[in-house]
Length: 361
Image (cartoon, rainbow, N blue to C red; front, side, top):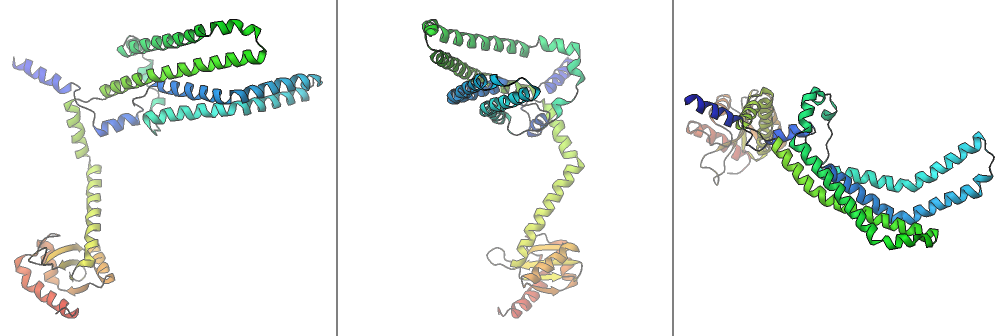
C-alpha cells in the first residue's frame, strides 16, 4: 500500500498540470514553437489579393488588351530573328511585371502582416535543423494517426466544403446570366465573369478568415497544452536558475551597480565626507526631520571611496580626514542608517567644524 502511494505521488509529480513559466515560453519561442494558424495567412492573402484585383482589375485588363493589340499590330510585322524575339520577350515581360507588381507586393505584405499579427517578430533557425525524430517511421506513423492529424483532416474537409458551397451558390445565383453571356459582347462577358470571380474569391477569403479565428483559438489551446509543465519541472527550473553561478553573479553585479549609482546621487546632499584619507570614505548627513542622529548616505573603500571624494569635491561638500572615525563608521554603520552612539561626540565635533566653515552657526 505504501509503495502504491509512492507510485501515485511520482506520477502526480510528472503530470503536466502547471502553466508554462516565462522562461519555458521563451525557450519554446526560440525553438520556433508558437501558436500559429496557417489559415490566418491564407485568409489574409486571399482577401487582400482579391481586394487588389477588384480595385486594379480594370487597369490590369487595359494593360493586357494593350499588349495584345500591340502584338497583333506591330510585333506581327517583325521579321522573326534572334534579336526581334528577344526584344518581344523582354518588352512583354516588363509589361506583365509592371501589371502584376502591385498584386505581388500586396500578397507579400499580407503574408508578413499575418505572421506579425500571430507571433510578432521572431527569427530562429531551430526548425531548419535536422531532427532524427522527423524521419523516424514509427514517429511518423504515430503523427499520421494522432488526434492533431485527425483535427487537420476535419479542418481540411471543412475548408473544401465551405469554399465549394460558396462557389456553387454564387454560380447558381448567376446561372441565367452565364447562359446569356454568349449573346453579350466580349467586353461585357469578360466584365461579368471577372466580377463573378472576384465575388467568389472575396466570399471564400472571408469564410476562411472566419474559420481561421476558430483554428487559431485551437492552435493556441494546443500550444498551451503542449508547453505545460509538471510541478517537478517548475521546481527544477527554479533550482537551475537560482543555482547558475553566472546568473547569480549577474544579479549581484546589477544590484551593486544600482546601489552604487543611488549612493553616489546622495553624496551632493551630504554635510561632510569623512576620509581615511586614501582607503575609506563615509558621507554623513544630519536632517532633524528624518533622524535624531546623523546618518550615513554613502560609504566605500578604495575605488568607491575615491569616487565619493570626487563627487564631494565637484559639489563643494567639505571633506574631513579622520582615520579611526572613518574606519569605525564604515565597519559598524550601513547606508541610510544612523551612526552608533559611540560616534556621536566625534561626529558632532566634525559637523560643528563644517557648519562653522560654512558660516551656518
